Image (cartoon, rainbow, N blue to C red; front, top):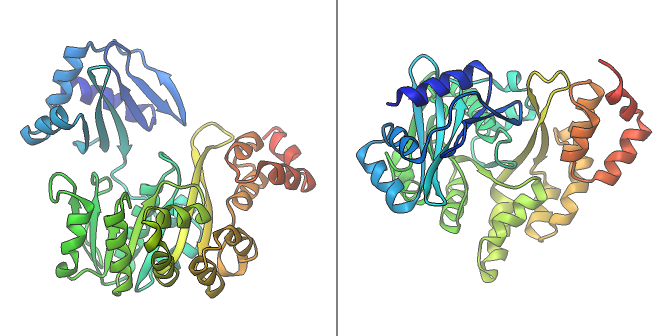
Length: 364
């Protein structure tokens, strides 16, 4: 436990910031509503920062950061919040980033996730992927979906996380949460044994490598609901990323497996609100219709976008449509939406045709 770090984290939460950046010789920096802001706290020199960070680690993790130069963990300040921590070395000195993880798990409705996510959460089997760039809120959305299952269905939920972020309490379901480095060594190791743990739902924090992806798909094939994340920006890119991890001679088989097991892809982007008081997520939703399953199996991922555009009756929507709706509701600015959209030229044309550029730029 570090009194100095805890004091910084109290200030972080007090300013409603999301991240704390600690770099040797520099003042602490906070990310507030998406923007980096230098704090008024004095800099920590390299030795002081090293000692403060080591004080929050157990002996095993101290050896790990020294040996491997990278470390992910969770940190808990009683009465304040949980934090996801990444420590690393740069230019021979240790640094760290703390991400705020609130105690309260926000619901699907509170996060304004599309209603179809409730239906996807309650499916008995298959693969659901939540995608987006780093910091787009994937973990928060997954926690809301797991919470929805926990409140509404008698299941056994096993999570494998790096690190554990949101802590779930048993409600209707039973939840066991395993953390890499503390409860298991790797995602793949945990997945190899998960079938013996009688799960109904499996959360894999991230599909990082071939073995983890293969095991997750196999778990979905054998009658489990598997939820995970991928660092991609839309559904077509997600399919390609998963398939491209495998050697060429296995890719046809993986496309076939994905076409059978995939239930949905939820892609999201996080944008600042117009009032400057927070951020809001825009979601792209693709659900696995027979037509989409055929496109995945045949490797025609470039054609998926058209099916998403025309699948609104089935709960699907493109990211650009979601951004348009947020502009229309005067939730976000046009310029921020344009920076996040998938097709800037088409987005600009649609926005102008619908008069949304003027709506977005008008005074609230």
